[in-house]
Image 1: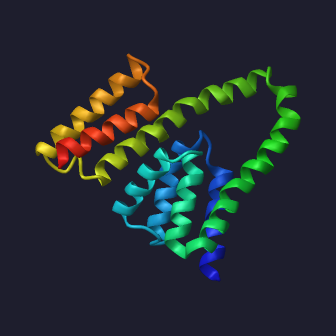
Image 2: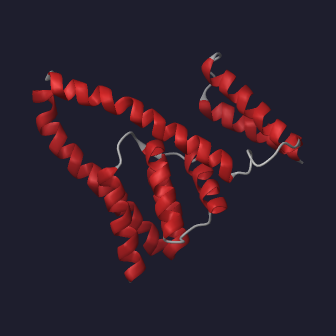
Length: 180
């Protein structure tokens, strides 16, 4: 029962203190999942990969994965409730007052200050996942293949605006061909 409360409280706090969307929350979720020993670094990397590919918000999907790893279905339920409840509370409060203050100079300045920090959190999550996946541990054929898939996927997304699902599927097929 204590682990269920710990899961709920952890994800409830994450929902309240994390800004910038699901990807910005990933470093914090990782820290908590590893600190509580609900997942290993390798399992966390796999969790984020699956959470990013699955439909829905990546933070919610990550909470589901961590909750399941920690306590099965009850863990899924409490982690999910914990991650969603703060957003619902905050959005209810923000929606009632935000539009009254949106044009305020101080509000705009605060938002402008938060944007680069959110980008840094997302970049940190990407670098950390790369290191946990072993892609920066040394140069091998696998490293070159991973860099090639990354570069082509980024090019497909940025330059050719190929749908992310298509990029994920094509990258998976490339991985089956090149890593098999």
